[in-house]
Image 1 (cartoon, rainbow, N blue to C red):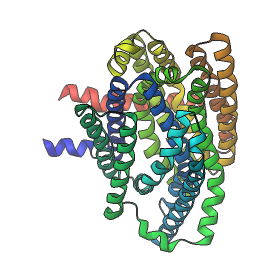
Image 2 (cartoon, helix red, strand yellow):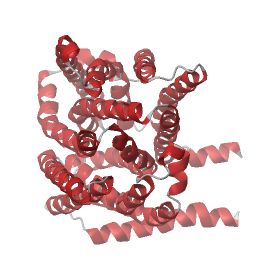
Image 3 (cartoon, one colour):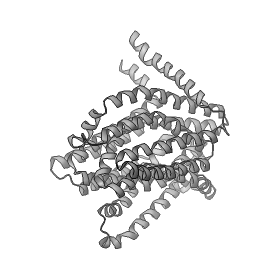
Image 4 (cartoon, rainbow, N blue to C red):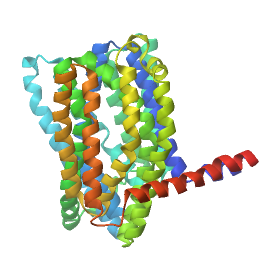
Length: 446
């Protein structure tokens, strides 16, 4: 029986979903603990650190992750070593540049009065350095579709941080400084362990080649702009709220956004498996297959999100209370979560259109798309805060960049592959029926 169960779950789709699900659930547990045991102000600074940390790491990830998957997947051994070695070389250069920029601010710290900015200066560079080997290993494992190893890595990473947080709570030493120190040290130790396992394939750096570095650079210069703009798009809400409304408002707004990680689980999982499949199809000049994969995954998720969003809207107060505790129950958090769940139905189509543009070698168009989305979001955020003078204005403003992304991306994607919204709905409905028949109806018969 155990063997039969393992045969059913031992596939890239389930393992990818499990890895992303485990990461999201464990991260949510950690955030729940921090929300309960840190003050709202300290929690706001923690969110600010994470925002800037992710933003800086985004430059490295955006420059190299998609390029690695695109140029590495399905190639021969010699080509694979060149690509990985060149990625490692560029990753080290990018990391050192950011660490030097970070270090340049250190002499001015005595003159800086903003505590949030001081935290960013002290910890972001160290964080970027600590996760370097782990980041590259994750990209390689994703390209190889070794989602079983990604699952192990994520369990060790997030599990260690949860354990450290619980120990600090038990010892009554849970302070923002200790949380930051634990985060950096745990990531550093895990990265060192990954170097010894060989998952990061750091030894391939000796195979780096100038032409491959140039190839990755010319692709990455657009994909990094896309990724940075996408993260700025998410971070702009936090930055503007912190600037205009303060750290407590950041904590309130971040709470429902943390719950949105539940929606991100299936999106990230299908993107991880779909990206490699689409890259392989493009490398073999099968554009019809690219359109089919894109429509199938995006349509299935969109239709599946409709009932999920309905129940989340009805029961919004419960997860807000469980995750944030009583002090957030009578804030805007629950209503913000309801609104986010409504527009989340359209997340899959926007994400897959974005990935599709990169995979068919149109990173410049994708960059332009996300830049327009970012500009639209900032303008709408400022208008929303001015008009509503509350977090609701920021939430409503998020609708505009989503519409821009879908319509602009769809228009340009159709110039290169035979793709339509109608196909998304039809393919999604067929795939969803197939899943229901396979895993629900058959199970009832058994």
